[in-house]
Length: 212
Image (cartoon, rainbow, N blue to C red):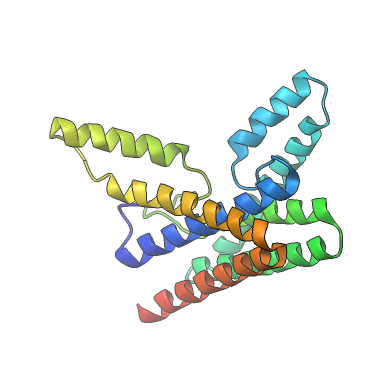
């Protein structure tokens, strides 16, 4: 995160906002499953398996679809290297549109699975300078890095730049709050806002490439 230039840092926060927004929609619509936070689904799958509950199958299915989305996103990013962020985010926009269409056609679970697929794809949007994919749909690693850098700052040694990580986490939490509030007010508005946000991020990423 801190190795990105200012434009990419802002884009990363925007993608985190989108991930939180969509995850909140998926969580409420599915009755307690996640579409971007697979650690939570892994725990749900394990507990469901221990209890011989159908939740294990539902959580496992979401995980499988999410991983398929990650693979797909990586393949798309590899094909469009110069415009990876814009192209991946455009794919996410289209997938969110499909999810909305499924939801309003009465296909609730296919819509949730489409949201999970989109959140897998979006992880390929940003690439670190060393070529690694920068995941922005989960925050455990981000919080760990933030804590380690706060410790560095208190010791007065090492890399103490922790505010970037706080911003990324705050983006996801803020997005989740907005997603949940808008969904509780109006389901169509929540899906529409998610689509518009993804489209705006795609356009911003495309402009960043054009400005280089």
